[in-house]
Amino acid sequence: MAIMTITDRHLRPLKNLRLSVTDRCNLRCQYCMPEDNYSWFPHREILSYEECGRLVDVFTELGVDKVRLTGGEPLLRRDLHILIRMLREREAIKDLALTTNGVLLAERIEELERAGLGRVTVSLDTLQADRFKNLSKSRDFDRVMEGIRAVMHSSLGEDFKIDTVVMRGTNDDELIDLIEFGGEVGAEVRFIEFMDVGGATTWATKKVVSRAEMLAEISSHFGPLEAVAKNDTAPADRYRLQDGRTFGVISSTTQPFCGGCDRSRLTADGRWFLCLYAQAGWDLKTPLREGASVEELAQLIRGKWVQREDRGAEERLSMKEREPLADAAEMRNNPHLEMHTRGG
View (cartoon, rainbow, N blue to C red):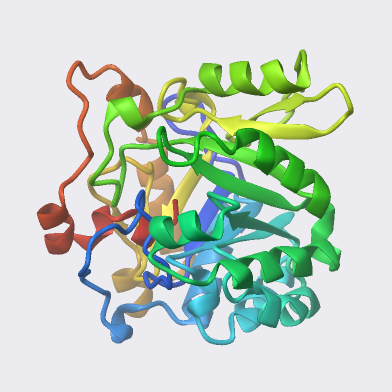
């Protein structure tokens, strides 16, 4: 089958796949997994690495050339380096990345390098150990710092990013410190507006720090900022400080980028979501396990994508009374609504 690029009804191509390898996580961050109890996918429902590879092959035949491994926390999946090595052998994949909370990163960094991982992003919302404990219900702050410094001294440090979800009254006083820390460890920091999706059951408009507010504070400290020209569909708007350092802002909540969104998400149990805000996804695991051919799976995926109209973040922005996308009870009944199942 010849590689083709398919587009949806807004002419957005299918280029970028978020592949979740587990719904489990070893942190309980306030904006993602703040509840005490969760419904987990049965082990038998989780895609094997071979099944992941077969589905990725179908997606690359349809134009996908960027794959990001996510979770939950992907490093909780045993022998993840095996999947990374499998995917690295696919010539169609030009960008193979991993998003992690960093807790297990130091002990796994060498096997990730050897397997051929291209890039890594670490989620880090604070530089304060006590605040980290309150935000994540974990005492693993030092392990995250160790993981970040391990990246700095590895081949993965070349295009290293740190993602920070900014929440008013929680960590919005650390923007400057985080940029300085990024400079120390060779990472570009990307500040993410607090989103009303998935497990963000405590989300409220008043907790959102907008891109405009972030830029105002950063420029008041560092001086005038230069917008960096955008030449890809990455979600972050990037800015350059006067000393040449860069940082990014992902303003999904106040200034959505739906018009250029080329990404979709495959959950660990094989359900395909066309938008982070989508209420329902498409089951790819069942036809895969029932023996569907590459052509049949491609036809299914193509048929859904060309009908895609999703502009979830823009629709949320237009709401007069905006509340969290789902409450805890809804997500216990339907764990596919959770951020940690669909890979953020």
